[in-house]
Length: 59
Image (cartoon, rainbow, N blue to C red):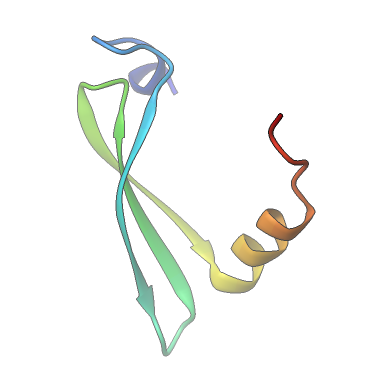
């Protein structure tokens, strides 16, 4: 998204926190985008854990 790429710190995503709804198992992740706004991303807990498990290690 454009608001994540342009700002004081372009291309940066700054994690702010997350909330898990135990009934629906949906995760809401709040983050600062390019140092200009706060955004919200959502995912199912199982999808998020699978993504983390199979993501390549950062070197």
